[in-house]
Each structure stands twice: as C-alpha cells, then as structure tokens.
Amino acid sequence: MTQDSKNKIFRRKVQPFILKDIDTKIVLLSGPRQAGKTTLTKSLTKNYEYLNYDASKDRQVIKEESWSRDKELVIFDELHKMKNWKRWIKGIYDTEGLNPKIIVTGSAQLDITKKMGDSLAGRYFLYRLHPLTLRELKGTANLDDIFKRLLNQGGFPEPYFSTEKYFYDRWKKTHLDIILRQDLLDIESIKRIKDIEILIDLLRQRVGSLISYQSLAEDLQVDPTTVKRWLILLENLFVIFRVSPWTKNIARSISKAGKYYFYDTGQVVGEDSIKFENLVANELLAAISMEQDIKGRNLNLHYLRNKDGYEIDFAIIENGKLTQAIEAKWGEDQPSKSFLKLCSKNEKIKAIQVVADLNREKDFPFGVQVVKASKWLSNLEL
Image (cartoon, rainbow, N blue to C red):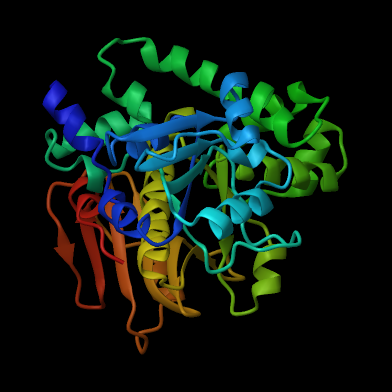
C-alpha cells in the first residue's frame, strides 16, 4: 500500500464533524489504544499543543495550566487518569472558554455520564474512534484484499499498514501487555493480571458463543462477580465489547448471557468463520457509534435468540424497534432458517445474510437478501 493511501486513510470519517464541533464544544475522543486518536487530533490543525498526562513534563504543564494560549488547539491525552479530571476541565472551560479549542482523548471509556459532583453537561460532544473499517478503507485497495487483511490483522492502523510478515504478531502481544500492565493498573489495583490474561485467552476461543459468568468463574477458580468485574474492565479498556440478546425488557437483556467480541479481530482464535463474525461485529459497532455520536440516533447492537435455540448473529435496534437482522456466514448462499423463525413478515425489517465467500448475491421473495460481505460492509448503511 502506497504512502498516499496511508495519508488518505488517516482522514477518518469523523474528522469533519470534529472540526465543526471544536468551535463550540469540548470534544472528547475515546477509543482503543493505538486506534489513531493522536494522529487524528494532530491532523486537525498545524497550530496545536499536545499534552500527554502519562508524560511527567506534560503532566506538570497540565497541573500548572501553563500551556500556550496562542495555539489554536490544545490536546489533552489520557487526562482521565487525573483525579477529578471532569471538574478540572469544566473549570478551564467556564473561566477561559475555548481559547484555545480543547480536545480530550483517552484509551479508556470516559464514563462521562457517571455522577461526580460538577457535570460537563452541555459543554462537550463525545466521539468514539474505532479501528479502521471497510467503509474507511474503501478505495485504498481491492475490497477483497482489504477484507482479508482486516480478517487476519485487524484494523489498527500500524499493523494494518505494515508490510512485514511477522509485525502484527509482535505488535498484538506488546499492545495487550501495555493495556494490562499499564492502563489496567491506572484505573484499578489488580493483582491477578495472569488470571485476566487467561480470561482473555478463554474469550478468544469463545467468540460468538454465549458466555456464562459461572462457567468462566469455574475455569478461573474465582467467583462469578469477579469475572463480571474483570469483563467490565476489559470493556472499559476497549479490549472486548459485549453484544446482549434483544428483548424489550432492558433489565432482562443485561442479565441474560451475552456474546463477546474483540476490537482487534486478529486476536480471535478459531476458524475463519469465527474471525469473520468478529469482523462483522466490529464493522457494525463502528457504524452504530458513528451514527450515535454524529446524529444522536438511538441505535444499539444486539443478537436474536428464541427458546428453541434459533439465533441470528446481530440485530440493529432503533428506538426500541428491530430494524435489521444480520446473519454472518462464511460460504452459505442459502438463507438461515432462523430468519423465518425470528423475523415477522409483518414488520419492516431488513433481513440480510452477509457471506464472506460468495459467487452471486441473491434476493429471496420472503425478504432475505444474501450479500457479499466485502461489498455490503464497505457501503454499510443503518
């Protein structure tokens, strides 16, 4: 892939929206470590000051509030590690306004709605930056080549663009080590890092399967409450994300068995079909996040399952209603029977079977479309 392609792709889809919002709001940008947050924010203007709370010199500047007011933009990275950071940034905004403009980035969930005294309500817009997707990469190479690279190396920019054969395997180990031995310890005192590593290994082999806290607890020889807490920590650090079953009863949905996927598809262990399901989950979640962050749409990602065991991998829910049912298959061009069992003919639902290896797309009279994955995902609309 050429250098021009690399430069082109780093103009992420959210960039023009962030550029518009920083004139009137604090912009909060969260997402997985090394997903491209720093590259994105530094590309917004040449006249910026970048301050990383992890760096001792930058931390001193932040505490002194001595950054240059002549800059157009100040970027505070990993600021969530500072105690009472929300109250602090609110104070800066209330006394100085947006002079310079402010972006706060972080590799952990910013938990902006969590109650803690003074609120940032009305002062910010939140964006989440995901690893690269087929929609963003479209036009930089052949779609099938992009698809294969995402399947095997994930969408994190550095390994995705690397031409070295073993670079990704080395990168993903270092990447996870930093998250567990630095980021995790920054947000909670954890002594059993090895057990969390084992938990991640177990999840790698169970992608797309229903996850029981009790079963994981027995494997790890800890109590289910501890397992649940560890899973939430891994979610907060953008290692994994949970897809819960859809039910109109939200409390039941949260309590019932969920499925877990990795932000880095390359972490998944198993057949290509399992990696493919993880890739589809990533593409859907990234698209949903963008619609939520830019347009404020009430969209959520779930899966469908009934008491008889019929299941559809993914369901897009908008304003409490099912709008799309999506099944991920590696090479099956005949629609899953689950569509007939779980999708009512009376509802206006898009029923789509996304197939990785497909010779010809099909459109069936009972409402199911069988589509080629690389093409459909690159033009994904919700």
